[in-house]
Amino acid sequence: MRAMEVREMDLEALAKLEIELKRQHFDNRLQGGTGQKIKSHVFRQVRKDIARVKTIITEKKMALKANGVSKG
View 1 (spheres, rainbow, N blue to C red):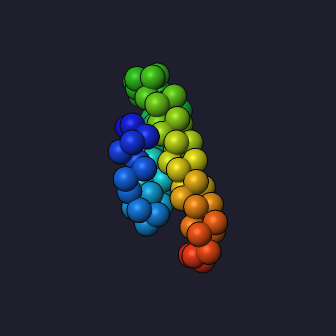
View 2 (cartoon, rainbow, N blue to C red):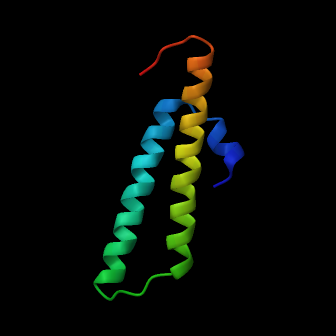
View 3 (cartoon, rainbow, N blue to C red):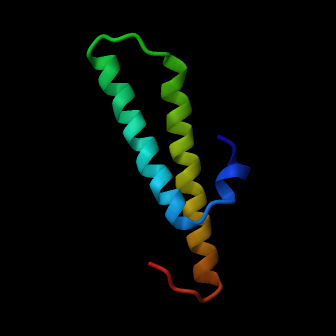
């Protein structure tokens, strides 16, 4: 997932994406804990995607706040 793709989304879509990524991260951890084979690079990729989405959500909220628009 690229930052350019994420930046095009609105806040609601970003929030849904964040929840989906957190769920995927949880599922990956659960699979690793139960001894199933998983691809180790997926852990890092999902963690970075979550961080990317959170960063862009914060940037968009700050931009709205700077423009005087209050959206909670």
